[in-house]
Image (cartoon, rainbow, N blue to C red; front, side, top):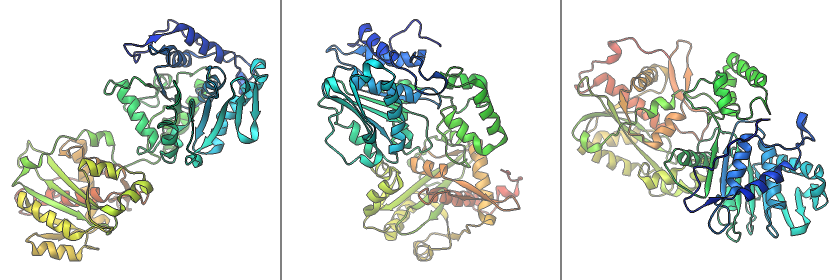
Length: 534
């Protein structure tokens, strides 16, 4: 067993806080009086591994001037098989039985009751194996409830279906596998104000990386990263993230050791090596290996665009600097109740310049709250930030968009607007009446393949700038690729809630910008060089 040597107080300790060794020792000793419950470790004393002890000492030993704990929230993100469930169960029992709180309410939360029961079952077995606790604790298995009789405190399992049950007076919450929460409702109920009546409530969040970057877990993950890297300060929040960076070699044993602090103790190197070899032979397993074994936030399926490359092209695009410039538009109307996208692409005027992208998006105002709840996408935030516009009513008001494009035409020299011939007949006629040149653009392989491949090439070469527009970024991240037998490609999406309208509009506009450039003489880069095959 690897024990903690030379403990140093966390760098996140506030200036007016102090480390109380007695309080930390008490928490560590309480946990180490418990026993492991499963596998080869069953029945053996729960000796904390160095990383586990560091967390316990930091959380329970760092106190404010009034003697109460500084950290109210602990976020621990770590790969699987590192001893998460045992640590979570031990913390739950410590809060219930050993924290000196009268009538303490401690809750174990997970997405499903079955998931929440995992930590409960471990905690119940720990009680049964500890004579001192078993005399003082009542286990109500059918209710998934543990009652500590001397203080009338309890530990109770809740699942995501129970979020409506307000009225909690929380002393502690243990969230197991936060990344599996279907929405933020349970999290908000349990952490926002429910512990205000307690002097030192603790929200212990423990999870492996997930796949949904619009979830409450990813939001908390980002906050933890910001604090770890010094971008944010929150003296009540304690962040711990063990994992591999995106740029690191996922097949390297050194990377495995970095991401898995319990490697060689709770999980053997041979098990990780076997999982890696399997992922090498079957690319479909790579993402699962990286998520579960290396704690990387990856998508469930492999996306087309490497987002780190896309993010590297986030040079600012300032409309005022582009005033009067030649540009080309792409219009994707989608449906009247969905997102409408209009994207302008400005071709370079000389060899030193790059392509600039200006995207615009619209949604019906009345459907916005519904879509936020249904799609779990922050449309409302984007709307407040100005990245997304709304039109009155419950359908997209095309007249409003036509007027908007007309205003853009007064600022920029829009030479052509490419549009999908399906569903845009009336608007295309209206725009032509306003003096714009409309070009029909097919959505099949023949039309979409060249500019889609060119978009990837420009991105890899950093010859395109998009200003980091978040709606467009989300849509780029949603792109999958369909191929025909000839190797042509076109963008597609995996789920109906994952929109790619802006990306399609940009690809159409890019095609016209590449073909016509700043002269509009019909010469094309496609004629000058071989296409990139991806």
